[in-house]
Length: 261
Ligand code: IPD
Ligand code: CA
Ligand code: CA
Ligand code: CA
Image 1 (tube, rainbow, N blue to C red):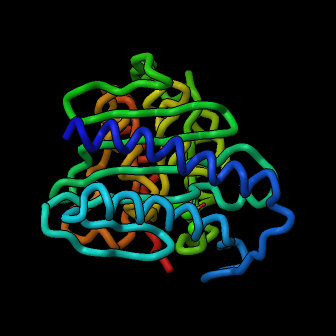
Image 2: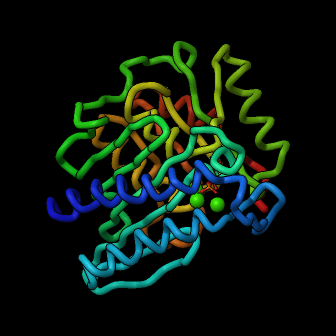
């Protein structure tokens, strides 16, 4: 796995540089909507995913690849690269720096490698199962804050979540005297949990490419996550990640009882 880990770090940095080049000339990019007016894709997302897929296929031809823009290419090695070329397309296209390249590797659904590059911040988060988590090479840990009120919680939503459910989740955090942010990049906010900046992160429905790398980082940084259902990597699932001491409380406050769309 060490060969893939070293490769993943180099790949995330190379993909981050390509994405940064597009970011600097984002006004010239053709943008299309997908499912919803806020669900966007541009040439940048597709080109960065193509670069990542081509390099993985050349280096590890038996591995599977699942990416947001081009879907699942099954492999035969048991390992699947789970990638989001640009997480935070909305901040990216609107000129904000909160976006990242997220590269995870799953073994039977379990995250074994997680690398997240945030080029505008010059940050590279990296973790391999059993090897700890780092930010720019220095070890990171989740915060030892036990109480949701003494830190900030990241929340996310998308068009699959009814507005009333989003409002309910936010209201529950505010009711207990807590604070929340949403920066437009769920993958980056998961990395912030690993780095001890956020106490936890919750989103009612996310895809495997949004969270596989973040889950590996958080587990290796001493945090707790709701496992992504490994047998169905292409189906969205609830995301919940936090410090061990605040996980159950965030679970209660972020639970959504209405059907998703
Ligand atoms: C989205 C971001 C956002 C989250 C959405 C994701 P994208 O990913 O992570 O923060 O709330 O659920 O779809 O489309 O920017 O890659
Ligand atoms: Ca997207
Ligand atoms: Ca994403
Ligand atoms: Ca994306």
